[in-house]
Image (cartoon, rainbow, N blue to C red; front, side, top):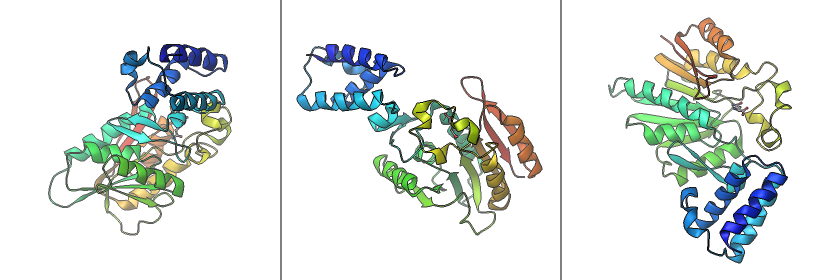
Length: 288
Ligand code: GLN
């Protein structure tokens, strides 16, 4: 059997199991095994896979059919310019989150280059996607990047990603509950976070691929989904330098509530902006 037939069979098998976008999933699996991009599969369609490749296709198919997200089955996923290792230790990096990085980078690049040194903290870093992308793309040599996570597993994964992306010397990671271990006031330039923001009750209604496979600790934002914003903003008031800023990903109905929290904590330049799908997704503010 050649790859063309394998892909067709995998596609129809996965479709029968209710896997979304079965053809894409089949192609991504095959491309990974061939060490090729999805776009270059065409050249392999009339070739026969090796026994090892067939076996790996079968294993991948079984995992997809059992409801595992394709990103975990592949074991890696692209985020901005990075390909990150991705497994059950952390939330899958989402395309919406890419724009949070754009906003934070824009702010960082506009800060004066006065030799004072800059510190950016990504709270709840998970795979490390946000902070690793910032370190990769920032033009600043005077900036220290730190990713924190309460989950030791997530920090281990983020460190593996730093290594894989050649960014180990640019980004530090620490196991920390929120921002709890900072003791020096006014030492941070920017706090960036995609915290858990799904209301506890709504977690049960998430797509089963998310609900049953991604870490609940990275999704569950408590009864109203807003607890982490409250906590991080309160900490940010002490930790940010004057003129420092926060950049948060938010749930699409949380814009007004997060704006109010920011206002109540004394922030200025409060903004909520939309993602590519037109939903409120980012909240940022500056502490003047
Ligand atoms: N966007 C995620 C979802 O699919 C939630 C991410 C988060 O809680 N930070 O629901």
